[in-house]
Length: 332
Ligand code: ATP
Ligand code: FE
Image 1 (cartoon, rainbow, N blue to C red):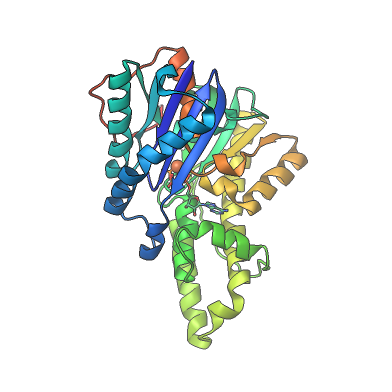
Image 2 (tube, rainbow, N blue to C red; image 1 turned 120 degrees about the vertical axis):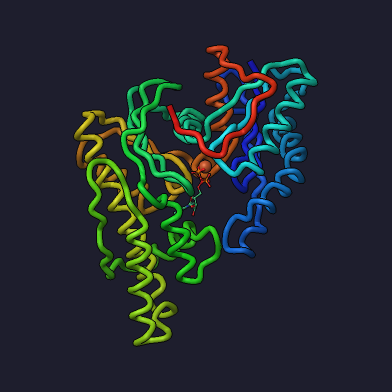
């Protein structure tokens, strides 16, 4: 079974080839252009996907050493995401599947972020918990099987990635700010205290943090116009520390409630060094087995779409040819 998978839900165009569950290639074209605007501009993203998709698919097939004629199915991200971005991947996948006379497989983007853990070893055992932290989502998921997932906690406002990106914008950092905050935080000390949101159970909230940072910066800048410049690394370390502590507190609670000690993180924010270190040290302390994806499988990539599609293919879960993308799509 050889599947070509396409991911185009946001601002990265990606294609991957998987053969009998083994990833043969995973190519990504990043859209640098959004940095100019301080965020993803949907119309610009859609057009960039149109320009990127054929070269990226060609490269993925070439790197895998696979010819189109050998494909068993074409998979694509159906949602959630930006509709103008999704439509490029969906249309391309449909056209290719139709011309080759092979089935189409639709994939849920958030399910795929979780299954990125099966792109390479070490692979978690079922059931496991996954904290999925990305640009648009923050979820604690109980993963019972490849396609059997239950969301037991999620954000009531901003996502963890948004918290990084919006705070970074206040600090004058380029979009996406997450990686910049991560890099700067390593040179700083978390000496500023930001309040912890009081949200019950396994849910998250990040909008209050953003507001308190905004007020904190306004107050300090009034006293010292160079406050950000002179304290950038320490501010970044403090912001990152707080975001990580919010995430880890709920993850610990989830382990207590479910008694599942097999714990993974996924999504773009799982690339964060503070979160990776916190998961490892907490895991060691509390006897969890922890799983951290390789960097290329944290942010958006088609390998995770390919892994998910492979398991849907085994179950013969195919999509009809008139399928349409969906911007919002609950998991499970
Ligand atoms: P979703 O998956 O919810 O639809 P998305 O696909 O846009 O959203 P991802 O590509 O999974 O999100 O992740 C992008 C996010 O990850 C951005 O918010 C970015 O700032 C954040 N991010 C990436 N690397 C790091 C890092 N090292 N530290 C913190 N955040 C990071
Ligand atoms: Fe994503």
